[in-house]
Image (cartoon, rainbow, N blue to C red; front, side):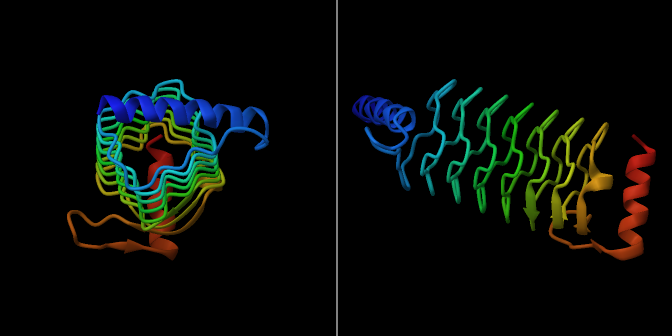
Length: 202
């Protein structure tokens, strides 16, 4: 594990050179299907890093820059991404059960079929983000901003939506409010009624 961390630090340094030189020096961070569970990568600049399939369960990534990063199919179970920058990041098929994502900036990020069940997204900027079959059941979305976001077949049963912002300007195609594995899809008038109730309670 120690050798792996030394190797990773070397790759992170090379990635900083790649970023600062706009690709002329160093090399882009590219890791696939690697187990980095429990690692602390707080405050690192991993912009445009290529990390598909990497396991980062219980990892600490506070304030980490992951702008435009490829995090598709990563496992971030119970990880701490508080105040991280995930603008335009690809989180499709990522597993983020119980992750702490307070005050993240995930503007224009993609969460297609991601699992965020029980995640804490309090104060998250999710404006113009893409959610397709995303599991947000039991999640905390207090004061999260969904302005301009796109939501289709998103699972929201028992999610905490207190103070949520921007849903009235989001593209809401359909919402799944089914509990457990039962699907209850709301569309059209039912979806508008659901949205009005959410806005009324906020």
